Image 1: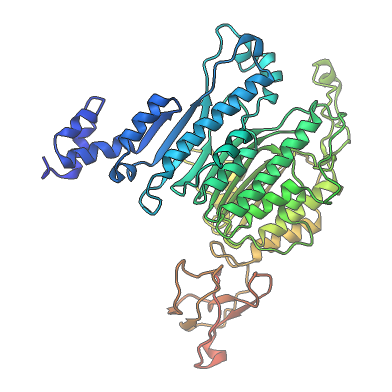
Image 2: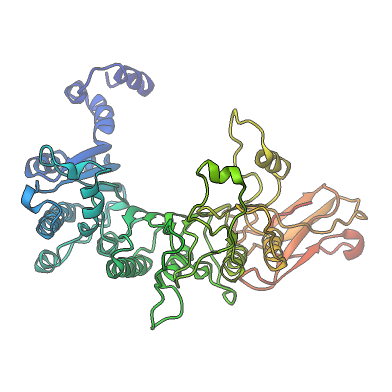
Length: 535
């Protein structure tokens, strides 16, 4: 059996009846094959019996190296009818959640942290068995909707302090707080990021309290801001962040909006914290959904010139209101005809349908200017609910969808597949982009980037010879070929002559278009920093 080719063994294993564990006794090679599929993804419950089996199964380093994904299901205590959705249930849930995580992290603390082959993704979720016949457990029932807000799952500080906090576990490379019927408190991110220093992926789902609880809304938003600041300080290897922050705007447009701007800062702290995470030197992918309430400070504002050095894709879904209590659209009423009233389609309270220049223009301008400072950006998607969708793609993106009926969007993308491109979707026919926004958007397309075209440089058709090129290594943000460290030497037979961008500083804000023409520079070979060319 040990001489059987691996491909044949995989084919045989695909036809075996479950469970596969008994087949591992055939041979050591067969054992490795079976165990690799068996122990790569494990579902673990917080009960003592399940955890003891997990400890026994992963005693050896060989087994630990097979682990790729661990789904950890925390069993919360079953509530009593009299305490259903009450503060005592919250306290019991937090104790159970803290003790379960503490026991799991203590198990990992005895593993060999120096073994670089032991790395796995940790998914944390909660579950419980509800009382029979309780309406509070049906997703759309009023007790569930009204009572769920006060039951944020959080760590019990007394238990953590008594045990010295969560042990340090550098073996976990990814963390996902799985969505469930209970809301996670944002403080979880700060505590877990301090115990998992080697995370390269972090995903979580949160929910903002309703507007009838303004103090709790302010507290939860402030906690989220502090947690994001802790993530930026603790996680130096983070490359991907996915957060779902469920919020939105009130459907009654006459409802007074709240303000989250404090006396200690003129800016929205949450927007600033998100921007700092996006600007981490390792951050490549950011996805923030759920109609967050954000300001233009997420892109730095008009006076900001900081670089987003490594960001490749970013997606943001946000509400059409600002953190200082204003709307992104104005109160211009829509026109209506008699039959709309007769059909019951009018009047409606959602009358804010005209973009407000005082709030929307600064936001979109900051977005465009920030995009120009993202040298590795490949794809951007910012969605403001019921108002605007902004998309930006480098050449070759997005990938065409198979079997998709052609429309205006697909025809535009096909026509400009080799170009950098913006798609701005506005939900108002009469509004046009002001010149300040148009200029900022065009600056993004013209600015050279590692993965995109170098802009619409003028063609020089008087150069008919093959050009010999010698170039020094490019700046680290803009390599001609990813990973190249040595000077580039080669020939370019294309006409016209090769045009390149010479960067005069390190943040790509000052550059000069140059080219090598043997007729004008005689036999001298020009040395200059290269960006990708666009004829």
